[in-house]
Amino acid sequence: MSPLTLVFIVAGAVSAACWIASLITRDTSWVDRIWSVVPVAYVWIFAGATDFTDIRLLVMAGLVTLWGARLTFNFARKGGYTGVEDYRWAVLRARMSPAAFQVFNLLFIVLFQNALLALITLPALTALENPVPYGPWDAVLTALFLAALVGETVADQQQWNFHRWKAAETAAGREARPRFLQTGLWRTSRHPNFFFEQAQWWIFFLMGAVAAGSVLVWTVAGAVLLTCLFIGSTAFTESITRGKYPEYAEYQARVSPIVPWWPRRRTAGARVA
Image (cartoon, rainbow, N blue to C red; front, side, top):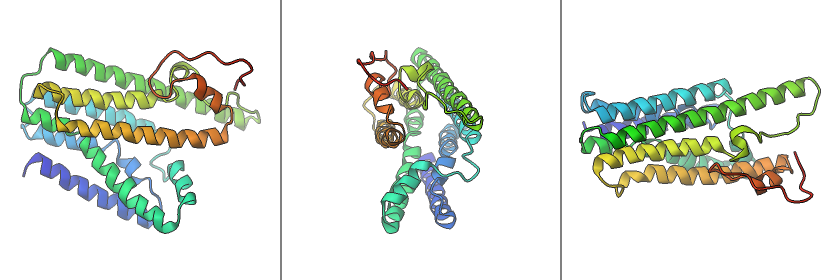
């Protein structure tokens, strides 16, 4: 059996399990819970196809394992494995009929996202099909991947610290101000964690492209679709945040949405959170 076939079989089984679990529990966050796990398995399947002898594939698998371990830890400490559903799904459920939401659940939450989790790992297939020696460009991309991993870790830790402070202020009977994070990396980007997350998978694609000797390879589809998903998710998330915090509009006006950049100056009379 080819490694690609095995990945498709595993992805199909995982999709079926997520869909059935969502119907039984009425909780649509099952794909969120496997998001940081199955890509690790897929890349190791490709690495195993060489009997774990290809250096590039071993490095790629090791990097994705680090990515998965960090993301799993961050998801777990926020209660992601305790039955807490993503708040965005509840918002969508309230806006859609039960039948429409179940179609959305099957087609987008389960099938599209599971397909995406397989697609983002396919640069490993490109590397498998082009077994050239690990070289200087691979080393550069490895370092960049690790740098992006550190960047996302810092962004998530800053967010974690802020929400712990905010909860402590609320528990003490005080109103937390500001009401959303605007310092550290979040001063230069409204979603620095999203930026570094996408950067890792674009770098992963480039590792496969280096092996192929060209960026014109079809396995770029995973990184492209992931970026499209993040664009849509960011717009939806920010619409919810703006509804909760009117001052978020001023933050949007002066801070880059994704790519870290110098913030614009506040306009005269702008409200400060």
